[in-house]
Length: 423
Image: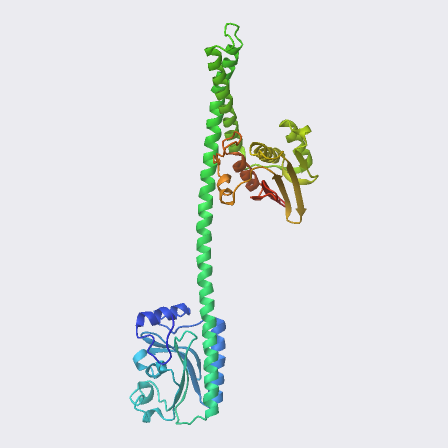
């Protein structure tokens, strides 16, 4: 909120009290509004200096709420609270000007005030400076007073104005402290909610993975039996090659083997995660074994750097195999496939990168393809059901790391997986 100097900026009592709350001063309390300990101590020192410079025995920092005057710093008197209608400062603090009165009993603004008449006090000399923030909000005053009439020199008034600015700085410090406290509380609440959501998500994913594992395992047995009988029938000499029956059996075998492969993928995905057993594994040896299993060892397609790291041997092999298989399935029709596997090791751990020169993945699709069962369905893409990258993502998380996708210079996809030290 912004407020113009010299205007009754906060005639709305609700707005005034809300603004004070922003400063960490709760006007709903029936006790004096107290800043934090460090600010309170500093205010006491400023008020003491103000009284000594002005030669007055008493000084206070008054905060004016909708209903009360709160003394949040005091010297020579005990800090207290009074109704706003009894406050001397409440009559003049929104004027935007300093108020210096040699004898308040002779001033029509204050002559009948209980602080002057003896009902509460016997104030004669009275001087107050409005506390105006950079936004124009005036929370109260810096005030010095005495039971005896007194005059202030121009230099003393100037020093009092300087000290009032220091009080404003201290209140702004309280303001920032209050904002930080609220932000910290909100952050803690948000983190607690996120942790709860993550725990529920992990539990849900674990149950889903367990269900997928059970279903895929239960389906493999009858499907394997069907494929076995289909192969026996295909070998029957009474089945003529090229006949309709032979074609039907061929379709059954093709579809069955494809479904079996899908079930193997689901089963592998469900098994990835907890219970990892990290040991020293060789990046180059793992890549060589994967290339041999995929039948591309002698084709010069895969180039791997020598590096050792801590990882679960089985899951690390699955990760490299899935990434190499993906590169083969999504190769570019315009160039020979090349896959370069490298690693970087430092005190934080190891980052393994598998870079291919294939079709690549558009930036807007990179988060999408990490989800299970998501495929881009581009023309010419190889077979699969969208579990390769999501499985790799789970392997990275199981090791306490993360998986990121980027573009290979010259075209293609680079998958980088981090393995933190000490996993």
